[in-house]
Length: 264
Image (tube, rainbow, N blue to C red):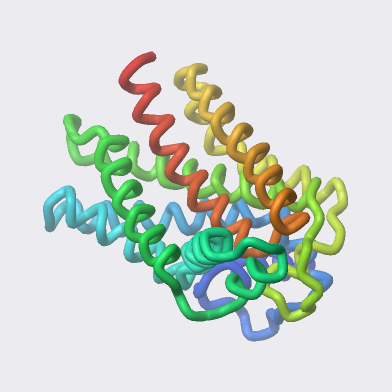
């Protein structure tokens, strides 16, 4: 049990800015096993966003409440995935060879493609959350709904991203790259753990209405075309690619919820 706790805290330290016990380090062995807890970290990130939403909703407008929840999620993860998304926009937008794309993505400076991509990303995410949360009910109903949606979105989007490493080659040779330790090998325990923690929140929605299983369809399509695109241009994936997929998956899940509420 202690070993599993250490692996979990390793995942929490790697993917967020949440304080962890002092004995936890970026041990490569534990980082590799931490893959199984990546979607579980999404439960925590989504839960923190929901908590801030619950507090803010009592004090401010719905729009400000959404902004505060988005802000706290960025602070919680240190913009880990948003940074990857921006790097992918810059790299694939400005590079035409594998070497050039990888070089641009490695650059810490943000370019025009990355800046434009982030603006559009947050704009779509804001309006998607605004449409996905039903505010017609009482306070308790809105907060319960928000918590369920946020946890599900953050867990499932992380599963979509991390599942790529189970079937795709990692392309960087740099051992210091931010996803190298999780890219070396994955046993059935990492795969099973990731899918259990990633799909569990969705199963609650499916229990309430089986139509929510349809959310998986666009995510499967996203995963297929993302892998195909990354393989075509760079021969595999990097940590930035995973961050970009996670962010796009978030938006797709929100849009899927809106579509299901409207048409089914």
